[in-house]
Image (cartoon, rainbow over all chains, first blue to last red; front, side, top):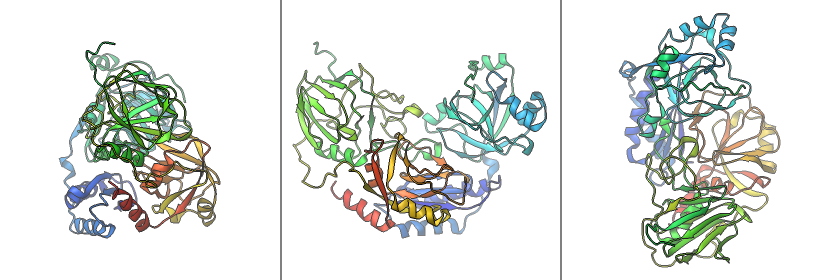
Amino acid sequence: MDVLMVRLFDTIEESNMAWIIAADRALRGAFDKTLIDLVPSYTTLMVHYDCRLLSHGEAHGRIREALEYLQPADTQAGQRHEIPVWYHESVGPELQRVADRAGISIDALVQRHCDRDYCVFALGFAPGYGFMGLVEEALATPRLETPRRKVAAGSVGIAGRQTAIYPLPSPGGWNILGRTAVPLFEHARRGDPLLKPGDRVRFQAVSRDEFEAQGGDTTPLEERP
Amino acid sequence: MSREGAKGLRVIQAGPLAMIEDGGRMGVRHLGVTQSGAADWVSLYWANWLLGNAPDTAALEIVVGGGLTLEIERATRLAWVGADLDARLDDAPITPGSSFAVREGQRLVFSQPRDGLRGYLAFPGGLAAPEVLGSRSTTPREQLGGLHGDGQPLKTGDRLAWRGEPGEERRIPAGLLPPMPRPGCRLALIPGAQIAEFTGASLYAAFNSVWQVDDRADRMGVRLRGPRLESRVGSMISEGIPLGAVQVPPDGQPIVLLNDRQTIGGYPRLGALSPLAAARLAQCLPGQEVRLVAVARERALADYRGFLRNF
């Protein structure tokens, strides 16, 4: 009723981000005080406008105008985050599953997960939860058949060719590989999430000692799916 | 009882679920933070209107009742709108849709749902609680909002205070307060999103069947039980989800997403319930029978604007 979905792409590509970010800025400007919420995702932006102030036609018109002369945003301007992760089976129960599917050792899996920058495509699911990708094809692993009722905060996981960090304890069906001590939710609580769409993330494997020194919680992720 | 430190009201016994909710946390979904806010926002608006508050002011959303007991520490006037939870002030029944005076030492008890699921207890000027990302609404899953700002629902021993003084007594004009949902109640659905991807038989079934509210129903979403709906898309690339979105996962049973829904998701959708219909659904108990009725966007908008003219 008071929502319009702006669909820019049909597939998930890193190159989408320059346009999604540009469209986000342009739409925020075009709607200004009549905007209630704007939710960008991989290929779309959902515009929730104040229908007491704008008709559907007017909202349509503002979107059309805002997108007419859109220029791609400079994605190099996004922040680059290095995130230390303790990869270990006690906190990463799917290390073996993902490694087996790829036909490699756990050590090789860790190395390859840390081997590239991931683009933050969207925030959603939970406060500050960044959907990142793309992990290399060989490591792509489908979600668990039955989601866990509780995944620990800081858990780093893979689903398909995406990777993410759980900011808060929550239910979840991703393949968990390890855990980080970097707080993500603290930022979301203040309205400034650590990860933003267009940012880049690189994981760094750290030892248990380093993880603990960073304040990491070593409580095993016990609940098996 | 010592009067020292008297704030307003003390929770003698916490029921199963009572939380501070207001009009919701807006403008934050791009952070992954949910909208939240009163699930039956229509009742919240009327509860606040009775006290002369702005309609989206923070009040108490009381679900089921279940023995929630509040002791008054300071005389004032409160308003109670929404479900009939067998509310009593020192044994005198409180009718939903009214405001009433309370005195120091009196007790308010909410027992069991007799009609509807959630009631709204409003306070002069609204409940005092810190604003978190622009709202006082409680979201336990995200540890945001509520009395202490950490997303905790009301606990035994909590003390509530309000921010204003009661104004002139008001009564809701007859016929304006919508009744709680009746069996077979009609929920307006604005078709949209992926509706063209559903099979003809599924679309017929969606709008010509009686749906039952499943026991998997909460502030995040309400699952409906009935014929299996099939669409040609299994899952999609995740995108933003509006209030009332009717999504259909692979098992074919629709889920209507409410205030605490996740911000993005990837199941195909029939469209979205109108805001007024979403508020009605939030009052349905498991087992309640409902029907989905397709309405045009313009119609839903006119109904919504018409409703808002009351405030």
